[in-house]
Length: 441
Ligand SMILES: *[C@@H]1O[C@H](CO)[C@@H](O)[C@H](O)[C@H]1NC(C)=O
Ligand SMILES: *[C@@H]1O[C@H](CO)[C@@H](O)[C@H](O)[C@H]1NC(C)=O
Ligand SMILES: *[C@@H]1O[C@H](CO)[C@@H](O)[C@H](O)[C@H]1NC(C)=O
Ligand SMILES: *[C@@H]1O[C@H](CO)[C@@H](O)[C@H](O)[C@H]1NC(C)=O
Ligand SMILES: *[C@@H]1O[C@H](CO)[C@@H](O)[C@H](O)[C@H]1NC(C)=O
Image (cartoon, rainbow, N blue to C red):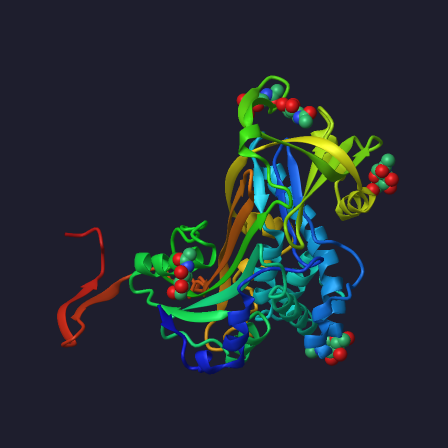
């Protein structure tokens, strides 16, 4: 992997900051959303007022950014639910759904930093950032990525960005400085003369950042690729009260009215924050991790999944989060391990991000020299829940390529023509022809 050196990356201030992002977290900043068709579990941004974090004293000028981040996590939560609904509508019935809303919002925010005009407007509108400008969004992410560094030692959260550049391709310096400074991005070059090796190199980078949970995020690269924006999210948390493996037993899990599967059911009796919302047909349990995160399990009543899925929104989740109360519970929760892989191009287009994928895309902020558009947005996520805790990882990649060089100007060879066959190195004319009638001998 060749570090992109033109910017003197390793000596930069960003590099120094980068070393601190390895991890951990504070309340109120991290959203990762896991929904399965029968079990819905959300580790949700604690969607409340600005917190008075002790570490504020280290960032005396960051109060404003904290306020902007508060403005961002509302739209981010709305985007998460809207995206969930799309993915769910597209998924085969009964399929698990799992993704990192934060990862996708973050990757698209890095993309929008290089977009202009209508392309930018569509990205912002879909992300719900319409009342903000790019500078505010950049600063909010900068604040968010920095605050991740202050957490609890039993909890690991690593969120970051990177840009893989085709060797020889020079994006606008201003863009690189934005992604490096605000999004703390690593920047490296890949040699696209060997597409497989370049993909393997990007995959190695992502695997390293996700503790090898995601090893094949990139399947194939486009030979016209100029750059790839990468976001990774890694989370590992230990339950505040671990489940005892001795208590885990085989039990039935009812996928639907006709199908039952056997799962390893973990059980634990303890005081948990719960809420039974009979009016909305839902039971909510919050399982804290050691540190500042929790998993919220939202369990719709029997046969009510579709109904709850229909109305679920940020406001419901917030209402549930505010309504939970400590209560003694004998909790049975299956141990599970799932993964999901999405190509988001069509989903994002349906959500209003259209121009970015078209020849009319305006990424002049990324490169003035070359005319670019997005060719693929992919997302992969894995989630493991067991007796000791949770490990989850996600990677989002945005592949950016040159637009089809041709503006489809018609050239029709429908009359007599010349043909020359030239050997390039010696510029030798090997053959020459004039074709008057292609059907004649
Ligand atoms: C973005 O908005 C902020 C706050 O309204 C304003 O101070 C700033 O000048 C704006 N920046 C740009 C580039 O428009
Ligand atoms: C990631 O790379 C760093 C630096 O090369 C190395 O120290 C670390 O062990 C790697 N992590 C994984 C999970 O491979
Ligand atoms: C129940 O789930 C199984 C397995 O996913 C599926 O084959 C079946 O069609 C589902 N039945 C109903 C009624 O949804
Ligand atoms: C049902 O959900 C709505 C919307 O979040 C909320 O206003 C209402 O209080 C909920 N009902 C109960 C019993 O919590
Ligand atoms: C909790 O529930 C499990 C499974 O239903 C049961 O085996 C266990 O005995 C219960 N624990 C207590 C303390 O009641």
